[in-house]
Length: 69
Picture 1 (cartoon, rainbow, N blue to C red):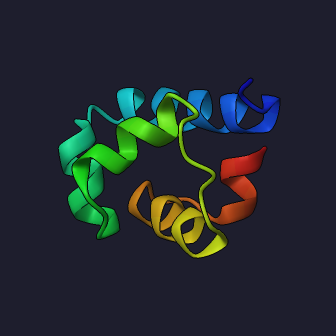
Picture 2: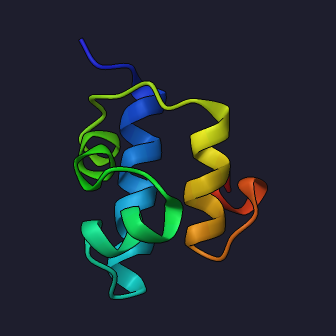
Picture 3: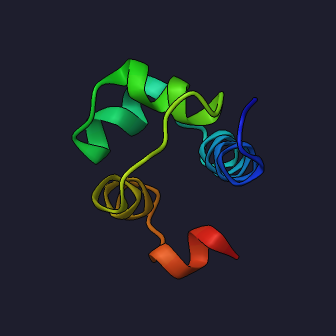
């Protein structure tokens, strides 16, 4: 069973990514992660590390705090 926090986080990443008109591949490139990793985050298949949360936040032009609000 997927953890609720992973589901919420993944939905938030996808919502912001789509709003910014970024593909998963483009976001992955900006964040310095593999393109499939973004999809796994959005589908709550990965328990993302703090380091990668920071990378994704920066790639989206947000602080970590903003990403969690």
